[in-house]
Image (cartoon, rainbow, N blue to C red; front, side, top):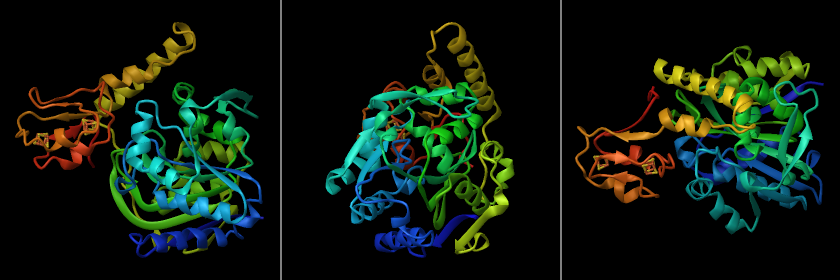
Length: 381
Ligand code: SF4
Ligand code: SF4
């Protein structure tokens, strides 16, 4: 039997009722949520809330996807639990506030778990190559079902990030970085051998192109895609972005490791052609590319030989990473950014941003009327 992927085009995605209807129709095309979730199930809902940026920037999953998934599971008598662990360079609480997930979960009265702070259990990875073992949050392992709610984006290391890559977020804190140390493409595949998605619903309403996964451009795509197989969903989403799935390393590895035949994917609903666009793929400046690769190599050496199994990548990347800075010649000290910075990281006397305080929300970048704020190391294209 083929792997079914449903595509729904939502014409007016500023209308939350239309989006919720599109989400429900996409799952209906797979046979209905009742084929996947049963009464009494504890259902983990895993959005992509990796960074402190709102869904309108295309960096994070829209709250309507979480809300609709909560409602669908509750209608069956199941118990939803929203769970996320942002990338460790970011302040997790800032992410939960800026994305709106804390407010949403409070309003819905649904349990929310910060996976970076959750109790973990070490498990074997069946057929693991990059990861032989993983530390995983107990709450995820003890869930009966997992609904994966990724955002559709380009990624400067993995070309795209969708359902498979979204599960790296379940690794606690610095363990996420181990995936980079051990080889990100195989690591993504290994994580998906251990944490299985029972249902994927992709937020492709506002997708990201160019310098993803955080600072790319917004593509008004208006797409919801759903499926029960992460590899099938990611393959079709790559095609929607105009990218050959065989050019995506983690998908190629997944085809081998899972003996997956992309020819067996069946698309229902709207066709790929009707929604397909040609996404700009990420381009790092050569200096940034060299710095990033060098940091990974140095970190791998330190991890293996000197640090007793601890990664220092977050500190290394802080030296050159994607933090905003102020161009003193362009800045007129209008004070707009300083008033809005949530953590008081901007010193307008010196026209400097304190990288140790900054949570990379990029509110300053968006607000500056003089284009005086830019992000170091990456191109806006
Ligand atoms: S300096 Fe800019 S990016 Fe950093 S926290 Fe403040 S507003 Fe956000
Ligand atoms: S918003 Fe721009 S011009 Fe105004 S103070 Fe900040 S950096 Fe300077």
